[in-house]
Picture (tube, rainbow, N blue to C red):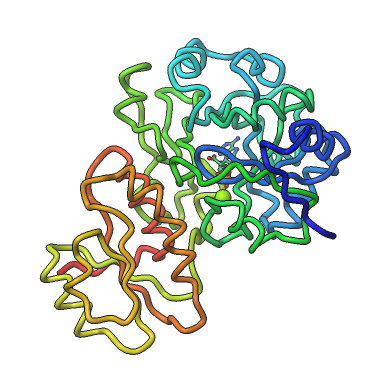
Length: 339
Ligand code: TXA
Ligand code: MG
């Protein structure tokens, strides 16, 4: 199959993209977080293909993407007031809410759960496609399961080219990390995955929330509430080790462990301290948004056959740093060295 690349400025891009969804095909869609691998959320057969093409575990439910907050009533029930307050403040945007699902959402979407994850993405072209298709779009990140999520159409084509009908190239993703997920079916609401919307911002709208323990440490035994959070994720081929501590001490440690096939993922401004032949800076230590935007693209750049081990610097702060740290720790399988 040849994967068509649709550009927003192409004649009838929205119509062509919506036709792929309506005919039960797979369409990669741009969003402000990462590219999604979309199918008609109401068509169980189309959604099954998402799992096949990605190599995704069947027990890992999908997010449905809607064009506006008004649509949540069509697919969810017993909606608490907090859902409307969050949607009002953060949609369209990088926040996913979990609600009780209605019968029209097929079990394959929710992996058999009684709840469903819903998000209204910022990308206008994607919202127009959802409207034109007249159905919600179920979409996980458009990568092969386990790989870093795609933040450009090129990343999508490198993982899924020839396996899907089309990709809409909406340019680089602004946030670069998957959406924040909050479960509103429990009390207090529980943050299952950190992202571009921070816990502080959510608390300011709905008050106290809990952070799922799986957000910042490995869960063995304890089952994370977002099934997807238990798999190794976001990882390049090489082994990843986080080195925590002050720059010069980290450099001393990393340099003494550096060999030909070693690479470093560091903060901007630190590059000069490392002797490794491959050093990539992904942003300034205190600029959490910049780190988030570049993290996955940098991990993809380091996904090379000639690199066996990557030493990575990881931010410790709050805000979006929490999401960057969550993704890096998972990619490193919680392998952290303190210096
Ligand atoms: O930013 C995003 O959220 C992107 C774009 C495409 O919207 N999508 C995305 O989807 O990251 P995915 O499939 O890679 O991650 C969805 C996460 C998984 O960890 C999954 O287990 C969790 O959401 N999830 C989905 N439905 C859920 C539910 N009903 N209850 C708990 N967790 C759920
Ligand atoms: Mg994913």
